[in-house]
Image (cartoon, rainbow, N blue to C red; front, side, top):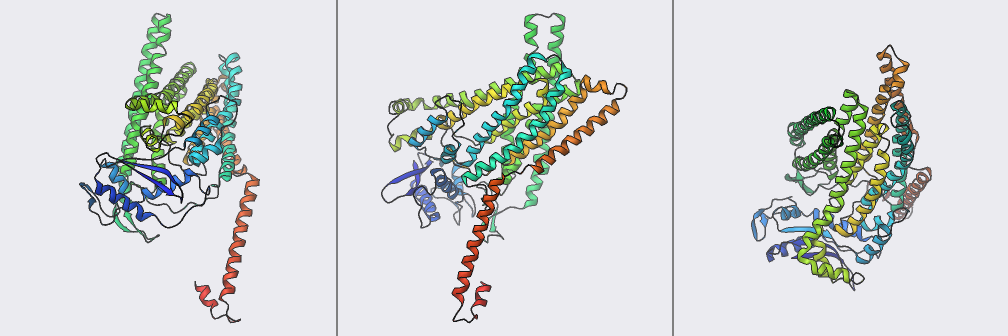
Length: 595
């Protein structure tokens, strides 16, 4: 069974969102759900093209998410599906298997035009970000905008890295120059991205969007009460209880996972030593290959551990019962970033600063980077497409018919069935996480492996086309996500750039060139490196302060808009003041002032 929620026009019915129910859903439950949806609707309308289709779908999703039980004790026809006042209806229906999924429908002609300009023809040009934003919303458009920007920002480092790799590779004394370039690069590109992001958001009308009072997230639960700010009924949950869950359960679990990650790292080093001992005893072609096996196995184990931990982090963050979606996302991102950073980079830090083996550091960095990119391409591009094809075996005739009628519009029922069987896009979280880790590989240790930037550029180019293909052909259309920037990921990248400054300064201090200046005193060398590192950190924060996040011409336009808004408000107030004047007497003006 499927309920199609849409805006209604006088002459046509335009479907926007599909609510798919289980095939054996009882009639009374369907009627009850429709009644509750209609209760949320209010009289009104929209002008043609005033809102994009993505924005209309977002509004419908918001209305469905805010459907909450009133005085019902259970879902009609399902006594086991208990309800209490304030409980999210959609979440309860999904958890009991009554509601299968909710997804917005694709617009066939719009999608065809977007696909052609986005990925169907290989060309050296920018992505159609405005079209992506119109179809998918600002959140996804900003991700693709950052992916494109990050790729172009890596080009200078890649161009420098190639000759550096070819001519100075074995001369570790000269990686100081590349490390110094890293220090400037990782700071400047993030500051310039802020300005680019502001320009994009201004063009899309989201830069000056005031953050509205956030509604409770659909998964939030608690005792029904009154919100002191809005005065409306909503679930209430003690903050002290949430903090206890965070510090007594979530934090110990994260620390345990970090310990396990470090334990696995030590097993990897034991395997590395075993492979090296075999190679030293009898160096052959096969033992040369054996030297790379531990790193490859470790890279695969890292990806598996990251995946398992991701599910655990989501479960814990959901269990913490955060009221706001922003709070939920911040806690989830913090958990995932801390573990992924330690899991992916701990071995490199150990090799660089404990073992101080630059050859092994180069080999490990190259192996981890290449293996993770191959796995990510397989998991993100080939596997979803293969799984979709496998799930569609029962509908192969319809799929073939879709190909034959590519230029014709499919009947609505067939389109709904086809899209219902497509994979679900889970958001930009994993995409940003991948870029965060790639940024770390490039900024932290690439001075000992200059080809890292080249590999990341090639990965990003394929990522653009594979992600575009997935969005248009593999995944259901996601609900739009209004955004004015990349959010908490900007802070994560800036934190990585700070760590990169410390790491590269330490690598410079370990170089023979730096040690030659202080042949008799390691203490003086350490003090000089610490002073340089503090100076560079100070320079970074000074640059952050001096380079405005918003370009000057956009600041002027925003100030003009604010001025015009205030002038319009003053004019409205003066008009109201004159209305309350009665024959030159001001006795009603007191009423106006009180109101």
